[in-house]
Figure 1 (cartoon, rainbow, N blue to C red):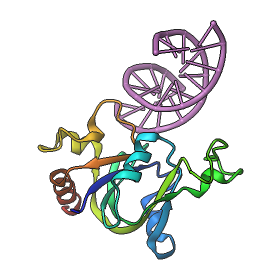
Figure 2: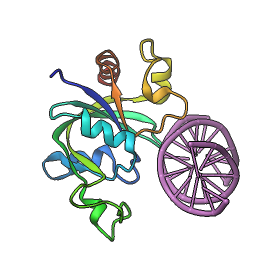
Figure 3: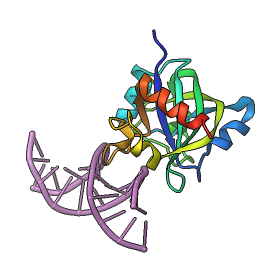
Figure 4: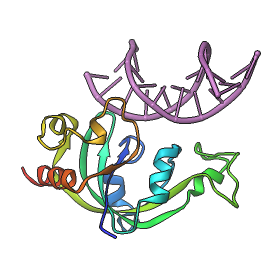
Length: 156
DNA sequence: GCCAACGTTGGC
DNA sequence: GCCAACGTTGGC
């Protein structure tokens, strides 16, 4: 299976790319996804070794670096944690509703690739992220888009 | 802070 | 099954 590419969003106020780099082993359990479409991507398509564009929403609005998938979809433990805001009383432990994957930090971009820059970049006009009202926190990225964004991020 | 877009919930 | 109300996301 060919390596696939994804864009994953995070509000840096709650979990930033820095937090990922500083996490033990540079890894984290990417939990808290409570959207069925995003869940389905995790379940059906995200594989170990896939590349991830790590996007900061809110104030930054930029891809700040690269991560990779180090563990495929597994039940999101926070859905069963009564004290967690992601607690889902309807989720059955025998057949969990929500999934998480594990991500590892890979590379900081020299230059964060801003939403504005991506809007202007030739070759990125079809990007999922740029669609009006696109709120998905896990999005597929084509090999071509990946190449372009990575090249932008590595240049000064 | 505002508001458009979107997903979810719940009454009917 | 429809749709209004509501909550959340996220760009501006």
